[in-house]
Image (cartoon, rainbow, N blue to C red; front, side, top):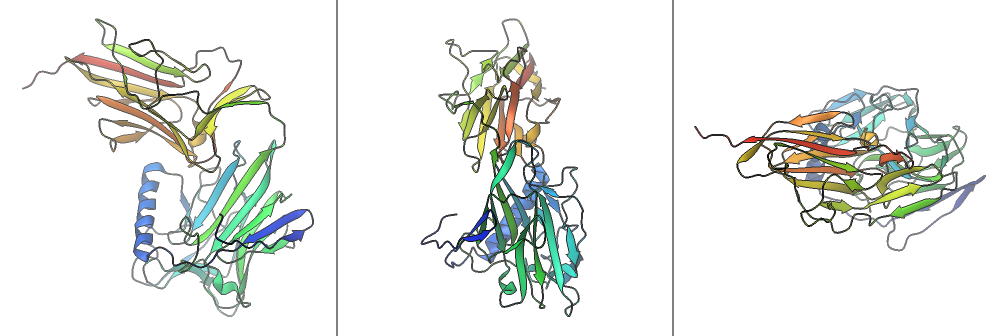
Length: 425
């Protein structure tokens, strides 16, 4: 979020500290690229899930005809990473397709908290979508409600950015973030960060009021640093624990990655089971030379032993940056073919609702399937190369286990069944 020659304007509101960071103007990415990004986002949704939308049509704003959509509301608050032990969480609303980055806890689509005389509209130009008033002569408003409460942690910093609200300037309207009540509000700058340190509130209301007949949340033609969000808004929450934790952290417990492990059955058998136990960092097999099995890929993650909570888990090393762990297996055996492969991974519940992805790919990288967060699944193709990849898209924890758990928990298991080579017809 740093930029050349940033200017900070501290404001005070009781015990709350607010700063605004300004960015110089810069021509944004071409509109054609925006179209590509939006299409890619839709494809990602179909594959991975996790997004929600505001009751919109998939082609809304892309068809070359004027269009409008009524927005519905919800009473419940939007969660900002307070369900899990996140240190960082980002929520986004993208206007073109009406996509929210997350769903509600019940997995239903997110909706605003208040909508009065506001609709989502398109003039018919590609991706020219915005919010405006239904009745031009009456005031309009729309607000979203966020829950800042959590157990054993508090929000240290909120960073809010609203894109395409330039027309709220000059008394056209108001974009604001309100803590706890609508009487404790801070004006949000256009296309810039509004940073709130130690908000000391349980609820955040974020929204806009339209006094004049203006358009908001349009694609910002000139915005420095808007590559990640080109319309709509984002709310980033940085959490800190309210307890002092005694931690043992290691990001090198898996050295020398990049190897493919050749899995084969014992002599005279057609079955082998490959397992990994995270708490003890133990594999069921070793390399032919007796050395430990190595991961194929291990980036941006760290193993944490929390002696205060008596737990061990894997998380992102940097709360804001993605990380992944991957195993690669070679199942080729002369004179045999793979009849089926049974795969199971335990302890990845937090990847649900776009927290991350767990995928199994075989033979070619694009031949992949999502791994269920509970239970097992079976591949019955002639699998010769297999990779298991877990990527943390958010600051979540996986393989969380009690340190004193003496059980032989198999966090990763791969059962392979071979048969004699097929005869050619």
